[in-house]
Image 1 (spheres, rainbow, N blue to C red):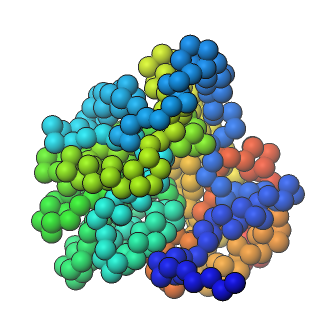
Image 2: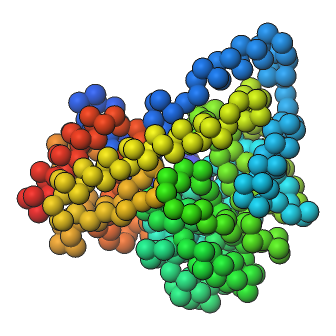
Length: 394
């Protein structure tokens, strides 16, 4: 049978990261391409205890339908956490639980974007979000990154020259893929520009709790007195990505439309996962767990950067990071980056080519992303030594 697909799906390509995972499945390949938490980062024992207790004492709570807006005790705990930790939440805001932060991107786009509308995003940016925007027929407008975040002059020019911008998408803290953190000055300027040009901001913050050093910078949402910022949070990097629990904080009028969109998508987020997240947040040492993760990833990050300094010999540059899970590497301009990544696979190490993260995939990139949270120290050493041998031939 000949299948006729919708226009919105015909233009989409498989995620480059997911395609690379096919190579990474080979046990002889060192995968520096994933973005998964470290295997020893999961609070497995606590989650097992909560699950056992839940199924013995109140199984119907986990097994029955729930509210689209989310499990109320979890919502209330998250509201307190957002207010106390980030200064987020005004009288006009609502907090809604989602199936991972990825669903926030989907629901906001579904609620706001018509085919041909525009979304401004960082260049580079997270491929999962970019593909979500593309799936609704949005035109992506990429804004280049400086060392301290999105270039504000280029952002203002994009806002001036594009009349159908629905929102600005940003990952201001330990950005995926670049690892860059936006300065406070630029966060304030971003907010001012969004307000001036009458567009919303979608602030994605999956890595905010994973700061290893330096001072925490206020979120953009904490500045929101005008109802123009939607904040996306997630348990994926601090409890479990497999449980698929995230949330957003948004002005009530917008959040109610997103709830209607969610009802047509998955009815509600997995109840079992929501209860586990709530119990772990409120009855276990959640802050102690976050500190454990910071120490774990700090050691892995420093080890990885030491390996990069030792092996790349100045031929491949990389960005120093203060948190998050990724390091952005830059090849000399004369080097063919896609061929380098392909050669790396042939040499049994996977990295993600920078073109995968661009709003305009026809642009040239000299960058690639590596992840240090998933591989063991032995795998990191082996993989980076391979990259180092390749770098010596450049």
